[in-house]
Image 1 (cartoon, rainbow, N blue to C red):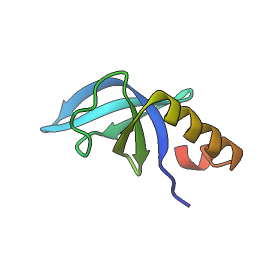
Image 2 (image 1 turned 120 degrees about the vertical axis):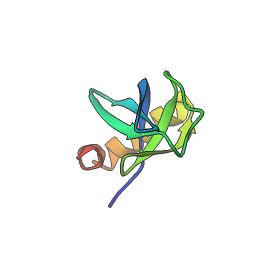
Image 3 (image 1 turned 90 degrees about the vertical axis):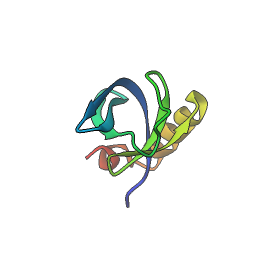
Length: 80
């Protein structure tokens, strides 16, 4: 099952005219496309699905979502 996973934007850059971010998920950092969330800035929390930031969420919602994913034992699968 593919789930959206919350992460924190730590850095923003552009490649070929497309906005990307480094997003931290716990202790793991991945590159994420920001084209669906063009107003995202460093420090924002985003919900990521298959490499795309699909929504901006607040810190509390990110923590609740992360806890639910941990409870369902889906963190490892989501980060693969």
